[in-house]
Length: 86
Length: 164
Image: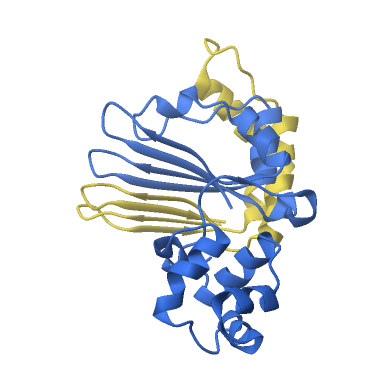
């Protein structure tokens, strides 16, 4: 997975890491905890680690079908760009 | 994915159930000429374009546009794509000039909905919150494809949801 942030005012950021390393059971458990902490209890939604692991399994499967798919592309009016590629 | 004039004529002709021979006869050309158009070996005479467009049920503009057809359409069972191949595309053009493109494979959307995830607020616009994505996915499962949603919010944001 690649994350590229291009900014006119700040330094550009290029992050590149293996999707499987990012999306595995261990990081799933940690990730679910972080997401739940971020969401808070007000929304009534609680992300389970098993759900996140399932989503990650699906991402790994889909990656074979759609390699290098641009998941998100943002071009802001002030010239900043963010691109997340599978 | 971009398409060519010939491919478009061939696809639309088949959709309408017209054979190359029938099309050729109605246009006063040979079936070989139609075959050549569809294989992009040559292009039809400009004077024939309105007739061709009328025959396949679209406008000359749509026929000449090399963008894929975006209008929503219901595909019959035999023409439906594998759900793994379908992409759920959300396009947001905000009035402030921000442009957001989100491309999500259909299986990811399904897993997200089953998990109870909601489409996050994008570009500060509340419009996406009002879209029932589970209903959209249910319609896509029944064969709906193309541009499913087009909204222009009071703030001037334009939001499109397509499945291709």
